[in-house]
Image 1 (cartoon, rainbow, N blue to C red):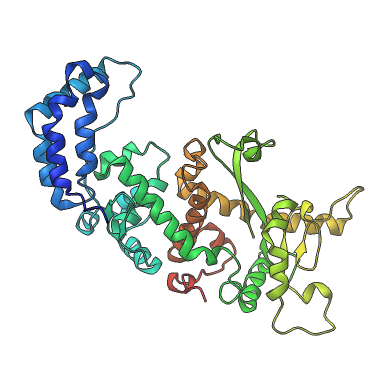
Image 2 (image 1 turned 90 degrees about the horizontal axis):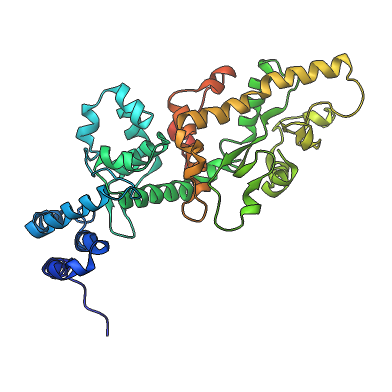
Length: 399
């Protein structure tokens, strides 16, 4: 027989009536905050706006007020207890966003009012109800995500600004991160029907050539970035980076051969990275498109690297290496743009493996950076004089 649904209001009333028992002197100080915490769990203002009135009435009860004052006094007398701020501030609404200046919105969220709405609409962000029934509309969820990524500070800073509890913020932000990563992951992979179609690859190769590269078919540069994370509870050796001397995750941008092999990039390029019109008698390097990496990547039909090895380089080889290095540096600038736009991605001590989707955080940060590039061409796009696609064109649906 199925269990009857719980009446939250009746349960809260029972808990309120039990306050004299569960806060009796014999149980103090550990239980001082039990009643308020239980009632808040049952009736959370983030969960149901209709319950917030009853919750405020219960919190205003003289006995609970006394209990809370007693708890705060106990915390003040205990130097080991970390002080926490009071939840406060303004919920994010469309009206509130319109009242802010462009400068303020760029500081908080990295974009202005019109850009926020365009991103929410184009990304198809839905309203959210988390596993603990925190309710949040699409606009607020997106802004909370951007606000989190824009700050490397404590999550409590957002509770002060946007009147959301820590648990609500954590669940909402993780839910929208998972949504974006699941729905748009194809844009960060092998989008050979659109962004990586051979006609587009030719445009990218021409842009690189016009910046001084002595190649005709190199359309991208490959490198990796190492993102620091907190020391994990399990498999610490696996996550430890001996070169950097900290725990980290690696992300590769189109340096190592193991990551290249695992990614399957060369196998995928062999499926589509060929010019649409090319003579059969053309040199081999002109019969396919290539990516360019450092010497560790080696050479293949779709991979080029600088001249390396023992012995001195010839003048031609030195010139080739110097010219390619001058354009290849832009891949590092691309990583830098992501990190500078979203400082939270640099706060490795906050990225706890197994507790948060830390790998998704960086991928979503790259996705949002690419979207912003469509609205405002960044340093790399301007350097290569390569106009990004429109946001609608970039965010095409997966086939």
